Amino acid sequence: MHPFTYQRPSTLDEAVRLLDEHGPAARIIAGGTDLMLGLRDYSTQPDVVVDLKRVPELEPAIRQLDGRLSISSGTVMADIEVHPVVLQHFHPLAEAAAVVGSVQIRNRATLAGNICNASPAADTAPPLLVYDATVVAHGPNGPRRIPIDEFFVRSRQTTLRRGELVTAIELPHPPRATAGAYLRITRRRGTDLASVTLCCTVDEAGITRIAFGSVGPRPLAFTDSSGVLADPEGSETTRRAILEPMLSAAAPSARSVRASPEYRLAMLRVLAERAVGRAIERLIGGSGT
Image (cartoon, rainbow, N blue to C red; front, side):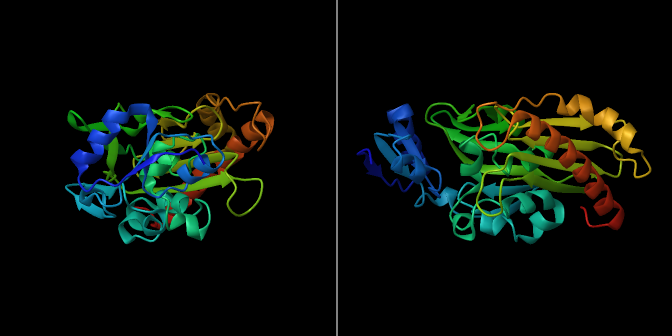
């Protein structure tokens, strides 16, 4: 393991100062599930590791804040997957959190870490995209709010600036009755990374949101406001005509060892049709927001 200095700040300002001072040579540890792997195989070689677990503002918390749900950066997947408000209003996010790694990993891995790692296969990214989440960051110039669709750049790269760290992720409550579904394809059951991830929501106004990942350098989101996808009486042919332009943005890498581009593109279409159907069923059945 590459030698590094360990710092454990007790205030948010101290954490920001350390990150700003060391820049790219610093790494954050909150859950540590990704960082520890990088340290062990030498793919990550920081000069300083900044432990955030003593910063009060980042302690685990899921709160209602004036029409939105705030999930602090210290909140782990195991808490998200069973939280009653998440289950009621953002059920696909709970579904995604429930399949991140193993039980042990979900009790350590944080939602903020999952998105800051910026893996195209991050399970929670598609649900956050369809719900128009906002990333709340804090840096040398104070707080900054970043729409989740502007947060991801490419694999391992976000729009966080030097010295910034994520303090919370906020999700606005849907303005109308909404239901959704999160689906994924993996090589095997268990802790494998997904070959394809996809989330879909449908609301009572007929607006359909679809986001997918692991089929390009970053997760993507699209909206259909025509009502065609949300129509429970719509034909498969009609739905496919709407879905095709959305899914055509997928560009899976040929270098991946998890699945070929052809397989991923085929499964992306299968998941999209399944997720739309499941979201419609849940909306009709009243199991959405």
